[in-house]
Picture 1 (cartoon, rainbow, N blue to C red):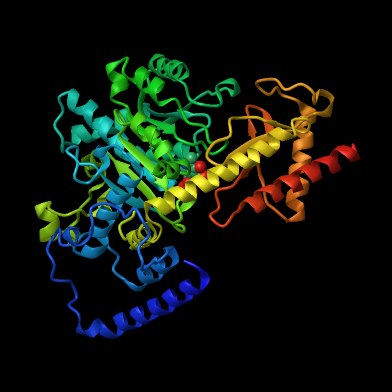
Picture 2 (cartoon, helix red, strand yellow):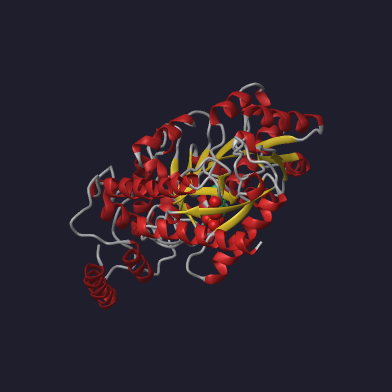
Length: 479
Ligand code: PLP
């Protein structure tokens, strides 16, 4: 959709919205529809090609802002609830996720839109905690609903520990905090590309056993924040199979950013790798998949794990549809009660681009990343790639000119290189032509350049490289 088409569509959206408001007095307060009314009206799969009437994300927001229903249960807004279920199924299919995450799965799976990956992860940890503590208390022969049962749950909770790698986003540690449990991290190494490995995980699990702690939740990451590495799913799952207690750990995959790549066929093998043994998966459509902020997709293998943990139903929330259990009430899938009609914008974007348009976007931006990484490699006298370029992200540093002719397979700590890299980073950003980010990987100061913006083109990527190279020469000359 170009600017002129957007203008026309936005004006027509405003007319629709005004007509809707003018027609409110003539409408029923609650629509006369039965559960499941929407499913037959919408195709079961997302479109492959863009549709002729296109509505991108911002228009979806305009319509969403029009409807004031807080949509916390089906009755409140059947359309909001049912479109969310259908669109989350579309997203699961678009990403090639295992069938257990579909709303129609035998495992009672399904997807829900959360505010952010952090909300999704904290929510999962609470569900995981409840599932684990419940299993433990029931195994002791105590009766659910008794005071003794509740007391025992509270006794056990402080011994629970959530595990993730030291590269996992801080939302995992925050989730453990919110769930009122402990957190331990698995160390990673630069010569293993900062990926969580089976052996390092085993060491942490064994240490927990020695400390009389119960691991209950594990976060695996597909695309870490620092360098976009992918934890070694197969190895990790093999370790978890080694002991009955480890098989009961809730395994979550955080693919907040890189999960978007799964729309492209060549990345879908990653979705299949965690087909077995994973309880939940999250990705942010608003990071790299063309939907505007906020649209965080969370999928769960068994929604009863979520609703068992989060369903608190006072009288004022009861209604015949919920009581019969024939509808989804998303309030029981998240921390908040009220929710926005975010499925609309995701629906518009999926229809607007079609799967092929989304694949093209991912391939184009990864291609720009490859171009950038190639440019960095072409000046191996000046720069050093520090970790494996991935998902349109290149992580590199400025070389220490004293050792510029040597390129070790794994970068070594080097204070001069750290200082140079930091100086270049700060100078580039202070000039405001481009904005780059930095981080520290295994003690090494690095610059990160990413080409995931849908508005970016090859010219921007080459320009960014030229600016960084020019600034590096300037800094080296000053020294
Ligand atoms: N997980 C990963 C891998 C991330 O990179 C990020 C943010 O950068 C998050 C989680 C947190 O995302 P949100 O801002 O949606 O909470």
